[in-house]
Image 1 (tube, rainbow, N blue to C red):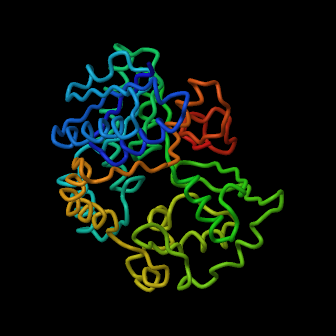
Image 2 (cartoon, rainbow, N blue to C red; image 1 turned 90 degrees about the vertical axis):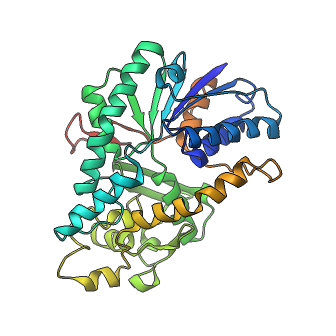
Length: 355
């Protein structure tokens, strides 16, 4: 059996997506054992129900355990996936936004750097270090895969203070590549790319279609911010990244609403015109959390209701791909956040890079 522990398994939809990707591999579907952990017993229960529904729906001998005891969840794990947010929406995220706003600092997402990102990192790094120590003691050979933000801060803290090495994972590079393929009018699987940088600020160094550089065509698109494409369920405008590409020459992998707060160029106290021109959604993460909380009870009911068909989407996340590659000795390209050891020669050794 392949034993996989999810720490933060109360992230029910994300846990469902990872499980769905894993069972899609024929070599794995009959060998999977999941150990789910969360400190929120109600959400953990929902994830347990969903995991068991997946097993029943797909008729596979998958075993599922759920516990609020983290060390118990980690015992004997072959893989550990962390996917939690320390402090939650209230009080932590609200404080991350409201205190800076009192002093004139506006944010969009606040999960990477700046005041919000730093505070989130200070909450999260100690927990990741504790998890790494538990892994060393009860699952010493486990592969440690982290999704918790702020990625660079967390992985740097883990590298310096943790007792078990980890790999940071983010889906922004492949998802943005799919968006760019759509903008260019080509199939996503035909876009060839190489990206590198730091998490949420990795740039596509190569974008090619059948060996031809597509940057010249990309730079002719959406030259007016008002015409920028809209992304995702909420239709977020992507004007900032197209502007950055025209200024710097390369397209960045994380979304416009994220990138807008990473530099001093777009959110300025005395330039509200820039907010309007580039359609920058201030307090966007607050809105997302409020929408999620408002919809959660109904979503939970649907996920737990056996009379409602359970959808099991393919997410394309890196963790299942890595697990499959290790278990089957299959080569594939994935992007991870790891300490720089000459991977990017104009960034300091030891800092966390996404390559």
